Length: 553
Ligand code: NOJ
Image 1: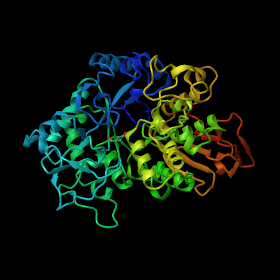
Image 2: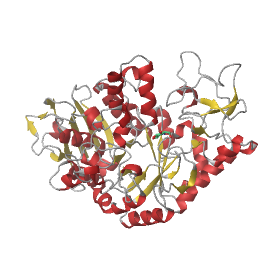
Image 3: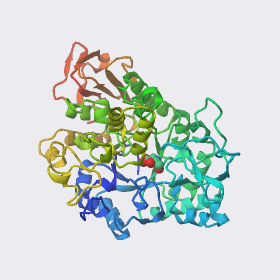
Image 4: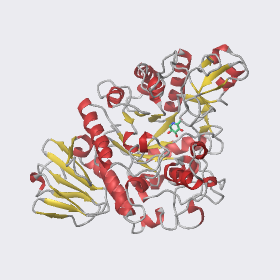
């Protein structure tokens, strides 16, 4: 499968559709909705993990890579789901969490029971005098080390204490991981998303970060990531020439991402990076509340698009996922211009160079929930952050406002299918409550809505127009203070994309050759173009196409 004209739909199974009334989404719920998924025109669905897990980190703490969490279904359900999607021309992408296991995993349990072979599956280290083995911190707060039973040793966990990092230096670990990927490949899985995969190449001596150095620099993007991935590729997903792979790259660099995804020999099809989503972090810190920095956003989005093109790498393009608050709230005006904001943001991503990912609910303009209490949140990260903010001296209202803006639960509320109780997600009590399904839901979008049809058109255009799938990319009007712009080009065919990120009009010059171009797609039916200039209304996006008259539509 080519991934250049592909669009991917991301499903958080726990929140998509509950077929049993348990309050938790499941695979049969997804089966009920395959026609809806197919109607979007996507070629692949990425499922967040549904393996057996104690759910400390919502499935990213895997206790058995070979079995489906009974709360979410059975192997038969999975086989049926793969077949139902395949019948509609849609591939399945699974989430492989290979950097760490749950501490409930049998390997960790055997290690705890004293089996040296399994102790070598993890990073176990002695403390230094009275101190921990090194100064690394967990991404969910606190130190990255916890006591390993009563051995006096510590084990490394870059995430929650219940997520123990695997020692990839051990060839047995690498073989086990390849076996996991190969198992799912043999069941018809054609896509793999690798969780925080640029953390697997840690230096074996796990050195402390020197004073003034961020500890992430000590374990991110290590030199072993590429060789480890190539070994995994040769033993598993590489056996299927058409497999689509995407690596989640934490705190990465453009240079490394080119290496990971380059067309001539990179081990992955494409990469996710998160830099463009950190432009509303005050002082680089997530748990803050600040307006987004538009110049930084443009610099990052366009710098990565152009840089990956120059290096022959490939980006996964996205605004939303299960770890991010809804983009409409962050970069648009969810209250005053929700439809325009949602379609403007979609235009930017879907016409850019790379593979677009649509996170469930994005295609109907879902927003962050209107929660009022910290008790409404479930996520371990949000709850830890709230406590840490209070401990750092924030008052309760302030701490809550920050969590409200930044929590991952913002994205994890149930898919809103219909108005009314529980949004058509469950007949039971949802594990996380929806709040605005009466105004935002699939049923309303199917009958006269504007966002869903717009997404369908964008996804179709990528398949119709090689200039979108294959064209080169260049920033346009890069210094404009309200508009993000770029051009795409392939042979004689050229596309200009312009998006106003603000609630006021924005005027700019068109490149002269585009003065007579036709509109390809825009979120307002009547673009205001005159005398070589265009004036975009609040949150308006337009794209103009120039063709050689024969090859394109
Ligand atoms: C990234 C995943 O997207 C996130 O949800 C998870 O908490 C961490 N990796 C740890 O697996």
